[in-house]
Structures are given as C-alpha cells and as structure tokens.
Image (tube, rainbow, N blue to C red; front, side):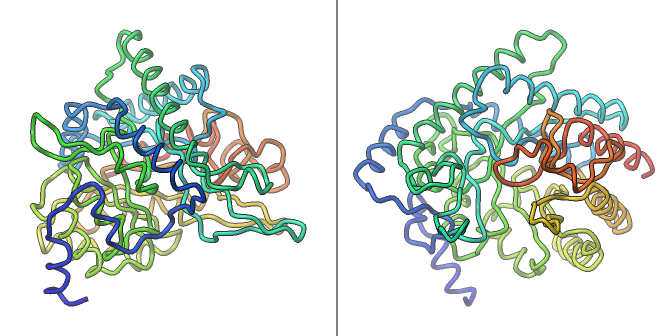
Length: 409
C-alpha cells in the first residue's frame, strides 16, 4: 500500500469498533449472533477492572526501563483457564512471580517491575483452525474465552457466554491480587501489573471507554496489551484497534519482520513517539538473533524512535519431540536470551525486559535445566492447555542466569 493510501485509511476518526472495517484474523465464528450481541452489551455495561492511574503508572515504569533505570519481568501462564480461577491458584502464581522479581532485583541491584500474563490471558492465536484426532476433525482449542479444551463437537464450538465468564474470572483474579498485595506489608503493590494478548477484538472493544479525566480512550480490562506475531498486519483490524487506545502496547517481533515494516507499524501505533508507549518484544529463535536484531536496532536508533526493548526467548523455540509432544529446550531459551543481551550491548542499546511462560508448579513441559527433565519425562506432568512452560525450578534458574549475565554489562 502506498503511503498516501495508508495515511487516508489510518488517520481517520477512530472509535473502539473502527477495526470492523479492516481485515480480521484469528477471530472466532459464532453461530448465535444475538447471544453474542447480548454478551457484548453486558460487557459494555461492566465495571472497570483497572484504573487510569495504574495505566499511567505502568507507562512511567516502561519509560524508566527504556532509560535503564528499572527492568521489566513479564511472565506467567501460556493460557489461563477457568478451572484455575480460584484464590489459591492465583496467589500461587502471583507469589511465584514475586519470588522471581526479588531474585532478579537482588542480583541486578535495580528495581524490577512485574507484568503478569494474568487476569485476562484467556485467548490464544492458532496456526491452524482445525485439528484431527483418530480421523475426527474439529475446531482447534483457542482459549477458554472462546471454546473448551475437551475434544468433542460441543466443547469446541465457539460460545459467546464464555466472554462473560472470562470477564468474571478476570475480575475475581484482580480482586484476589489486590487483596494479597494490600495485606502483605513490605510488598510494593505499584510494582505488579497485569497483561494479556489483544486478540479477541469484540471483548477488548467492549472494555474500551473514554476517560472523563483525560479524554483518552483506554482499555479498562488490563494494564498492558500486546500485539501478536500473527496479528500485526499493518492493514489489519488488530493494529487499527490498538492505535486508538492509550494503554502501553507490546509488539511481538518475529524472524520475518523487516526494519521498514517495523517502522511503518510504529508510526501507526505511536505517531507522537511517546516513551513508554511501545515495548518491542523480540522472539526470533535461537541462532536467528544475529541475523535480524542488528538491522532493527540500527534503524530504530538512527530514526530516534522511542521504544522499550524486551526479549521473549520462548515463542521462537518451540519444537516437537519424535513422539509429537510440543516442548521447548531450556538451553535454547537461555541461548537466545544471552545472544539478545550481547547484541544490544554491542550496538549501544540495552535489553530492558524479558518475557517468559512459566508455572509455579513442578510441571514437566520444557526439557533440560538443572532439574534434568528429559523428553521421556514430559508425559509425567504435562498440564499446559497450549504451549509448554518453564516449571518452578527452571524459571528460578533462568532468572538467576539472566541476573548474573546482565551484571557482566
């Protein structure tokens, strides 16, 4: 698309549903449209889950991270489930994140801000729309906000009522987190924030309101949203939606992202070049960082574009074992993270954050680490509904490695 066409298409009046005029991907198909509309109306009339002050606060910390004053630890479940929405489970996940925060903070001697993948991470993008098991083909599981994990036709049907349940679970989770943070003296409640992928656009739009205080449009369903690798089409609905809200935004940057494509995306999503607005989360895969990151760093630096850099060393390193089990190898995760830090340093930049999928429990989903999980042990306690997570010990090990390595620069 030529720049003149791009400008006329994008810089028109925005509203929470202007994305409907753009190409949509990764959106569910609902049979019962009247029920969907009823659920969306219910969400539009729901309470705010976060405050404008909290959103401004996380934006401030992301700005500080870009300047090297704090470090951002974004981590949590691959996909939350309704089954795990209970006080005990939520507090276990939050307290694990805080232990990792303290571990890293004590090592690098600077404040660490946590952005949990929690209180709304119920939708998952998928590469395929269908899956086949024993000659039966059904829609893929796309997260509890859309359909069920059980492999049967009723479970895999997109159900609008799940939107309401996802919201109620998110609300409960926020309440439990706030109660926990407020009751524990010595915990800085202003160092913990929540995030999820901006994927289900009807859901996100319904929670987007105009602030009477600032006159800005805000998504009051979370503090921080990220744009996924599969949805960052410049001409797509997800980019159109995200350009209009004032929440800070993460952008997943995969191995096929060119410098020019990235610059075009940043001009649409952050035309005023605000610090703290955009976090670039690189996810190339082990061995690919040297080929791709330097040209991106060079372009961003030469054009003086304001971004905060983070690294997701997990999503580019998914593999399947010979038995068809999805996994990730600890050594690959650590190697990509290490390569990314070194390249940032070589180019006069600095890595300001890291992004992990983790569990506080002793799951067996990723191979390796000091706990020596082998491929044959994966079936012992593989509990993820989607992608494999680092377990309790593996996540502590990666954080210790990260802290020790950062201290070299």
